[in-house]
Image (tube, rainbow, N blue to C red; front, top):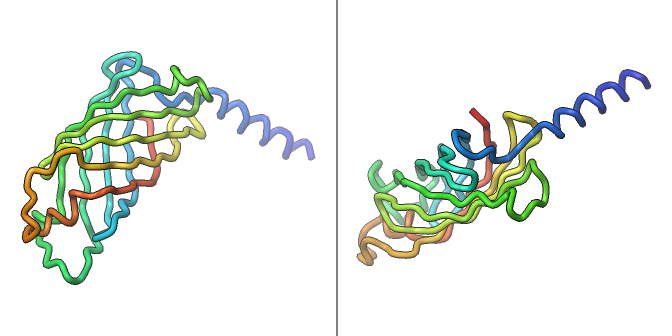
Length: 163
C-alpha cells in the first residue's frame, strides 16, 4: 500500500510540473494520424515559441490510404505548411498543462486555418488534436487529385513532445 501511495505521489508531482506552452523559445514536436474524407495519413509538425503567446512552425502531411478512385502520386499525397499559432492556454487558464492554439497556415496546396489543443501529462509528453480547414484553394480544378486530398476539412490526433 505504501508503494502504491508513493507511485501516485510521484505521478502527481510530475503532472504538476508539466506546462503546455512556456512562451519564447519553447519547442514542440507533434506526430499523429490525419483523417479526412478522401484519405488517411500521417502528420508531423514543429512549433517554436516567439513570445508569450505566439509560435511559428512547419507542418507536413502525407496521405497513405487514398480513396481507390483517385490515382495519387507522391506530389499529390504530400503537403508542406508554414504555420502561425496564437497559444491561448495561459489566457483561458483552464489548466497549465492544457493549451488551445488557433492559427493560420500557408501550404503548397492552400491557405488555411486550424484550431488545436494539447494536454501534457509530463514536461515532455502529451496528446494533441487539431482541426484544419482551407480558407483559399490555389486551384478549383477538380481534375487534380490534390484538390480532393488537401483541400478539405481534416482532423489530426496524436502525441506531442516538448524539445
